[in-house]
Image (cartoon, rainbow, N blue to C red):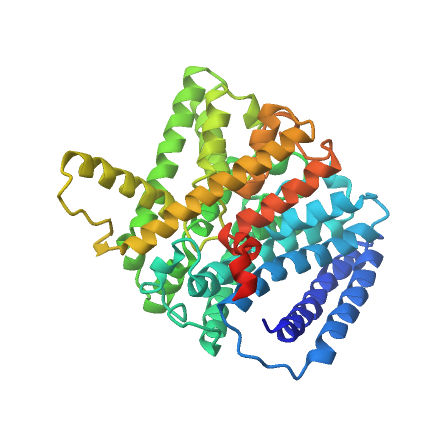
Length: 483
């Protein structure tokens, strides 16, 4: 294990990350909100620590293999998560504990969107901007991780994209082509963010709110600059724009890349995961609309459709924006929507959850086993579109699913041990492991009232969910450290 090379890379990352403290400081200067000092202090602290890690190891240039890749990916999120908490710790108002600051920072960076804060609209503009910026940067990190890095490490069935994804994912180690793919993904990500900002502004948001909400929409994060989230604006037009861009961000970014590079939308139409994703969204909207209408929760059909469309897409893509308190809906719907977050977005998107392609493959595998019961000697292959998948991929997906279920159960039991009730523990685990955000029970509005122990456990759940379980779990195996 080439630890010095890894420390050098982490030092570079932390020094680079320190630059993200500059925009909130500038926002503080523009709005004169008095909240800029913590960001200046955090900038100085981060850059000093980063250079201290980088400089003694600057000449280390070892060839990194898959094992180092796993460790770097995990440390990337853990180290940056803790450094992201630094300005929140320095804040005078609100005065956050270490657990609260770390929870909020990790929630932003992993695009979970769970918050410990209340009275959000009264916070300094610099703090509001920083929270949204964290989600935006985390979203981009996820895209590069999912499309350019994880397939090389062969994590949880994602290697099925090796043959299909344009760019470097066929390569076995870090190469300049990863940087090239990451650059193209940045262009797409920034373009979508700019377009979303302009659309929000045209629909009636001020520029500050439009940019902030575009950050968290494209990242499928869920942070807002108001306690009432999107409900603050009370605008069907804004709700529709949010839904549209959540759906776009929930699609595999390698498809966006393929469509942009070939200037042809057929890449979407040929992708079975894309079709299943849209089908799931449509089914959820129809079910929510039918149940809300039959229970006469809202006064008219237009409002019912608006709420059903917004909440079903927001929860199922794991964004977690709200226009109303969905936990007060007929109980069938909140539970259905929480379970839909387990599916989440497409692989290679900014959405959380297990990903549509994995759930679809589990379904296909289930159908195959049923067919085998009827015809034991027949040979059935699992096809994604027209492509037959090797059994190794299906086995990896089953492995991922079992690991996901195991981590879920352990985290939920740990939360019950901290004193949370059943519904709160279940929904908080689902909300953080799926990077969703809002839960039910005591965490329906915010996470500020739960114990510090529960916050630390849920912070770990966010990282597990964001790193596709295996990437973090592999570090706990003796084989990893012996190799």
